[in-house]
Length: 177
Image (cartoon, rainbow, N blue to C red):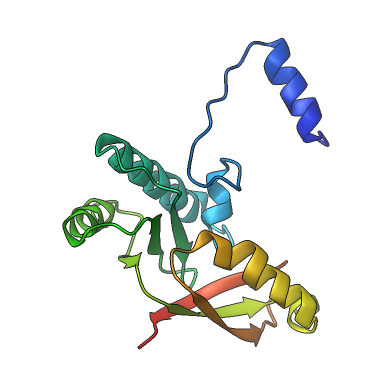
C-alpha cells in the first residue's frame, strides 16, 4: 500500500491504536528492520535475528533502568552468518556488556555478538549506483550508519556485482586498533 506517515497516523488515531515510543533512538522511528544491514533473504533467520535481538536489548535495558540515548543491535555479516553489533550510549559497564552478550548468544538466529564501545571498521558492499556516487556514500555513512553506532565508524566500500542488492550490505566488521 502507498500510505504516507500522515495516512498511517490517521488510521491509528481513527481505530484508537496507541503506539508507544520505542526509545531506541531520539532521532529515529521504531522499525527494527532498519537495523538489518544486509538483505533479508530468509525472514526466519535474518528477520528473526534483528527483531529478537533488538527486543531483548530494549527489555534488558528497561529492567536495569538504563537511560540510553541510543540502543540498537545492528545485524551484519555475510548472508550465511548473523553478527550482532550492540550499540548503547552511554556505553554499558563490562558486567552488563558480558551479560548481554550471553543473552544474545543464546538466540539461535545469532552467530556472533560484539558490543560496540570503540571505533569499528565496516566492509560494505554497495550497488554500482551508490558505489559510484561519493556524495551518496557519504550520506549513507554519516546519515544512516554513523548516527546509529555507539563509536566512530570507518567504511571500506566494495562495488557489488549482485543485481539483487538495491543499496548496501555490511559484510564484515573489525574493531580498530
